[in-house]
Amino acid sequence: MFTTRPELAGTTGMVASTHWLASATGMAVLESGGNAFDAAVAAGFVLQVAEPHLNGPGGQVPALLATGDEQRPRVLCGQGVIPAAATAQHFTELGLRLIPGSGLLPATVPGAWDAWLLLLRDYGTRSLREVLGYAIGYAERGVPLVQRASSVITSVAELFTRHWPTSAELWLSGGKPPSPGSLHRNPALVATWRRLLSEAERYREREEQIEAARRAWSTGFVAEAVDTFARRAVRDDSGHDHSGLITGADLAAWEASWEDPLITDLGEWSLVKCGAWTQGPVLAQQLLLLDGFRDQLAYRDGVPDARTVHLATECTKLAYADREAWFGDDEVPLDELLDPGYLAARRKLVADASDELRPGAPGARNPRLPEILAETRGRAPAAGSTGEPTIASRGDTVHLDVVDAAGNMISATPSGGWLQSSPTIAELGFCLDTRAQMCWLEQGLPNSLVPGKRPRITLSPSMALHRGRPTLAFGTPGGDQQDQWQLCFWLAHQHGGLNLQESIDAPAWHTTAVPSSFHPRGWNPRELVVESRLGEATLAALREYGHRVVDAGPWQLGRLSAVARDPATGILRAAANPRGMQGYAVGR
Image 1 (spheres, rainbow, N blue to C red):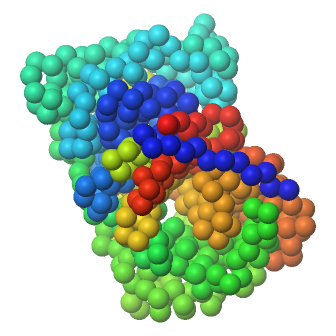
Image 2: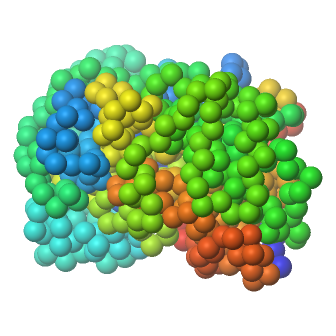
């Protein structure tokens, strides 16, 4: 029996995120008179301290936002590009066929700092010191490490001790991993942030300070430290030591930017996603494919039936196959991929559980998949230091949503620069990201490794408009599962009639029949991972459809959060994930 739960409601402001300290920080900013964007920036920096195994200062952040005045959503692109020296030829000469998932080779230009500051400059009202001070305080005084952070550090302790001594110095105490709940401090990161503030406060005006801090990062002491450290050869998951390719010049040549979103009409509702340099458009495609089966989608007592889960899974496979063939930082035929005629043809492929990867041919173009996928079929998913993990025991990434009384709204999914991704740069107190592992070394694909381009990332914040007005912001960590778990949420909310909290609580599922975006790029046709709360009868029916069902337990999949605003009444709502007892929604 599904247990109903109320969603949080109020009129002043709402913050929901994957960690209680970030949510409390965001609400503190709102209470002090800041807007939703000030709150998001402050919460985003706190997440780098509170969940260092899931994101860090050297990572990235895509976000969707809308203001109470303008209404038209915008995309904040905080994903850095492939370094100039990171050519496919270089990796081939090293004897590699896949880009490693750890170490220095897969680093892209760090994007989170510049993106958060661009957001603060253009839409915030507070000073850099005001929003960064919360994170500095936590890094200086210490934060209690959550169980998952302790587990991750334990899993890579030997790697740190033998090969990444700077990481061992920061994360191991006397050579031993920290216990869950123990305080962790990062004095080097505190010093970095304070030096950035010092550079900023040479200037008087708020915007001048923000611009100075951006320069100090991209052309100043941070870029210099990154350049020097990246020349070292360090162990990565290829089993060998390699030096990095990123340089200070790469940091200087890139900055965060604004883009138009993809907005997909779903009737009274419209879905807002980032472009096809993310996997975001797959959610639009999944929903449009499922619209042709809307009479077959059913929820009973808040739980979907087997037919609903099966249809959602098969539509997911089709959408993600198109992701593999067509998505990237390139000219992507999104209009044709979302065309009703194209989708109708794709919908006819839905039958029993498919064990094939079947991309379509939009506009009569011939789809092309990476050749190496034939070899990675059946490989185990990423674990340890190799990438953005997706199962509860290995973690995932982070997410936050904020809405204020004025109708300002933001959904952001920060990630990268995990403590286990690459060695700590000791003088900065953080490590670089490994997002280039998402690119293919095979050339001529939309997501091939090309210097100056963004990798096609999994990070996928979401927003929804109701009758053209920003109403809902939501998202989840989870790598390739992000737009699968968001599909579970949307179906529960829109088809199951559940409120925000109940929709997050509803049983979730995902398939691993789509190629992983993380080294070693495995995929497992017909595998369907489910929460047992779907019920034994449903699991048995799913097996009858041909799925290889993996029971993940009752509360294991997804870390969703959401905020909403009723444009007619101004009532605000929020909800957060109960799984892991870590997500938190706060407001009044």
